[in-house]
Image (cartoon, rainbow, N blue to C red):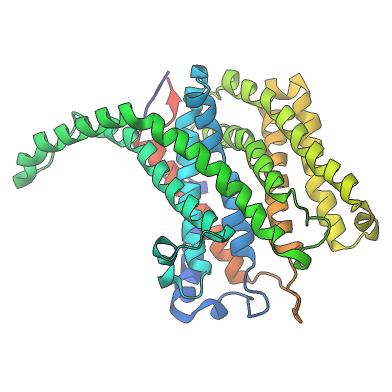
Length: 392
């Protein structure tokens, strides 16, 4: 099977619902840019970040990890039979990181200063490292996607009217670009994997330096390692989740041979993550905070419980053979990592002077849901028009 555009109509009842959600989010987004953060969010000087950082940025970066894990598997380790899932994973990562970069711009009060890290370097800042790596990696993702664009248009350039004279030069440019990328792509793939490991772990470093502002259940020196391991652990489940959703949406047969192999690799990775996480709890003697049974304790148990249940499911061969069980187990991993980022950036993080407890406003939730809906719509449009998904 070769990657090819999916022959399917774009508009469905589900697409219309997603379009309404996206439009609702865009309306609140317009209000945010016109009237400022205070008009849409529950953020203030004591609580400078909330849902948009915890979900849109931190969770978004983690859930886009399928891009570098699939690239490492298919290109660096040279497991050729996994190439069918590399392009969809690349597209998901590209859209995910674009969403993350946009979310950072939305969350910054003076969004028009988003370009400052490009020229105002601070090598001692973990946040600077995250920002630079994310920007470079997003650029790498777009470069990795370029061969899909050249493949779509090579030999098919047909500009109308007076632009017809540019048909041949444009086609030559596409062929030259495709040839150059095929010879140098390995550089960008390796760079993408390295950059991903750097900023995934540095997000954990951001919370380590928060010190006493972090709840002891999450505050640990190994938090960068936990962030990296959890991102790697959610990479394959995210690919499985996306592939099964796309197969059902476009009425295609799921690639169970590939997905089953991916599923069989998830349990060992989850095992390593759980071993480090629970082992650190024993070393730091932080289990006592669970016995308080307060909100942080219940949230910690929920996050860990989701991963443990998923780990047990992935240990079973029946799970890797069944699309339904594979989807359930992958969903649990995604939910567990999503909850982990929410816990670290929202639940565990408490400013020293915070007289009002933060809870996201309807506008914040609308923007997040709307942007996610918009990403799904863009994904659908791209796979219908470009050769991304492999099918008969």
